[in-house]
Each structure stands twice: as C-alpha cells, then as structure tokens.
Image 1 (spheres, rainbow, N blue to C red):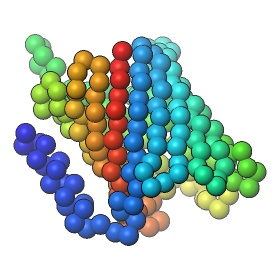
Image 2 (image 1 turned 45 degrees about the horizontal axis):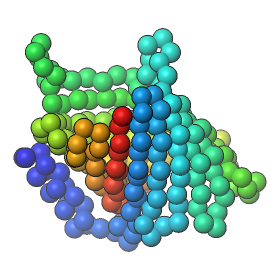
Image 3 (image 1 turned 180 degrees about the vertical axis):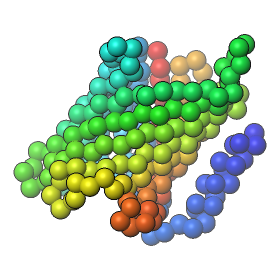
Length: 214
C-alpha cells in the first residue's frame, strides 16, 4: 500500500496549490468493452459538455490499432465529430520473470484525430499526441497508474504549424477491480500549457471511469 499512499499524498499536494481554474468541474466516464468493440460515454459535473465515442480494434500486420468516432456536444456551441486513430507501439513489463509477469508495465502509443465542427464559424483542425503510461499492480484488485499525453495542433487558424508542444494532458489514477468484469477508476487530471507558456499549469480536475469488460 506504499504506492497508494504516495498517490494520495500527490493529490493532496496538488490540492494545496490550487489555482483559479482548478477543481471547477469533474468528468465521469462509462465504458463498455466487448471483444474488439467499445463504447465510451462522458459527462461533466458543472459543465455542459458530453460525448459518445464508438471504438473498434484492428490488428493490421500484427499491429494494435484502434479506430474511433467521437460525437460531442456542448450547450451553446457546435456539435463536434472526431474520427480518431490510436496505435499502441509497445508494452513492456520490466520486472517479469520466466515464471510470472511483473507488477510494473510501461506502454507507449500515439494518436491522430481530426476535430470537425458543424458550424462554419468554428475551426476544424488536426491534433496529434503521444501517449505514455506507467502502471503498477498492488495486488489482483488494485493498481495505480500515471499517463502523460503531449499534444500538437495543426492546420488551425491562429495557430502555428510548428512542432512545439501545445499542451500536455497528465493523469494519476487508481484502478479498483470490483469483480471479474467491472472496474472503477478515480483519477486526477492536470492540464499543462504548451512550450510557449513554459508548461505552466492550466487546470486540475477530478474524474472517474466505470468500465465493464466482457
């Protein structure tokens, strides 16, 4: 439980230095996975945004690729259609032995997505991200994890098409397996500004995910 204590202390430290954009809303996800198919529903508390996302996994030439379409709405704004392609590059278990898989896993992937809006007044654009994740299993029912996602925006009016990072989405969470098919995951999400703003913290938010896997 030492790792869990470290995670809780990290959340407390973030709360102690809260800014004006911190903890103003929270996000809540509901995931359903069946074989290669998946659905993600997301809603926010104290925010009108919501989305539904439909996913399908394929394995071209042995690669792990996920195709997805997100349909998002925000009251008073334009409906968004976001096709996405996510490619997992590798997953490594550095503490594994010949007899068992180790509790620590390291994974790396990347994603390209196109954000398209119904209103002509709202800019469509491309966004690319890398996805790095560390996960440590405390036992068969609990695991802590951290994820970092630097993101780049392209072909958007008012934005340069350089290779500077535009923002970084980071998460620290806990997976709690409730039974064989249900997992509950509370987490904290921190959004950092990009390179032009010296990666200053933009916001903090609490989130949850309730996942069903069959």
